[in-house]
Image 1 (tube, rainbow, N blue to C red):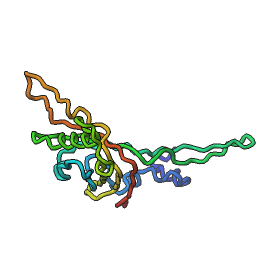
Image 2 (cartoon, rainbow, N blue to C red):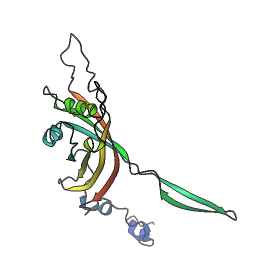
Image 3 (tube, helix red, strand yellow):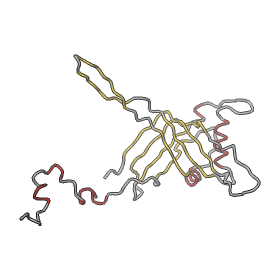
Length: 201
């Protein structure tokens, strides 16, 4: 008669390569997942020639941030006597872009800020272009853990807007006041980015 109380450990102990497959190991002392709603963006350098509504206002009115970092990897390859030899290397540049979604208010602080920045790169009236050094900014995007300690710090260098969406193209109607003309968006290009890791325990 078979042993009805045979434990799986009697068999699995004979091969310990998979002994991590159990609840206590997989829960990893109840470590938290990374969250998508604990982040901050701060302008550390603002363009000298452009109106700036201030970091406190922008922090409150920014609803989402979407960075596009160039993190490509490619391979060099050589075939020698029918053997393929490969070596992975990073590709591309350290340039990229970052997009923001905002909620503006009746003071139009964000809309005016984006429009003024656009104007300083070639005004509608006279096409006067301010110097690049006076129309660039720099910023820091910080990702936090569940206890609001910084875990990733992205530094973005030499930023300029490349798209301000439909910020200056509101939608009007005569029937429904629920249409929200307060939404604004902008995409900025940056020439270089750096990443610092923190609190990885």
